[in-house]
Image 1: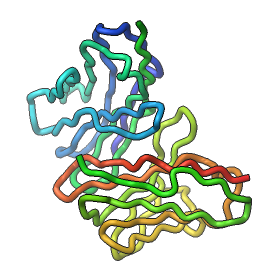
Image 2: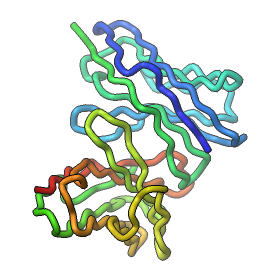
Image 3: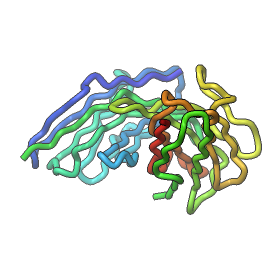
Image 4: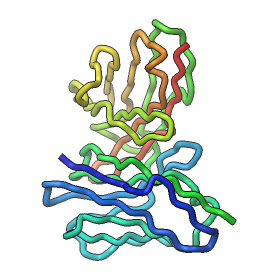
Length: 114
Length: 115
């Protein structure tokens, strides 16, 4: 079984600054995948970034990047140059491959202030 | 990215009635779809895995007879809440992974209110 833990219920960041959201996970699988999803007030789940566990290189998507520490089972999300539109719930999640179910963390609510 | 739709986006029904929610993959085929329930300010809770052409797999604690799932085609899964009660009021979300994709794409969700 997989577990995903997000220890920060809420975070706040000023516009244009950088913020890091934490996520730890536990799994007995050797092959797995990690994701960060964003859920804005519309409640539409949006994929932010994904990381394959077998890849050592940290994934990046424009202003979003991850710090994947496989030995520590840590998968944090860094948001650079924060924008007002980044305000949302962020969920860390994992699965074990194609068409396998996702395990979600409890989420971190990110506020972006002027 | 791939697009998943849900219908209706919101529904209000009387206690004791049944409500059907549709989940469609618009530009890809999905042999597997997932149904989640989300309470306010909480995470997504997986209810069941919908499998095209076979029975759904329900998570522990989810009543199979209350939450009927049918995956009739490679682009459509339905969730029917039978004999709905106020405690069934929630936000229901479906997701689907295109083949060879590891990530899932989510529908916009359905807000169910049972009076």
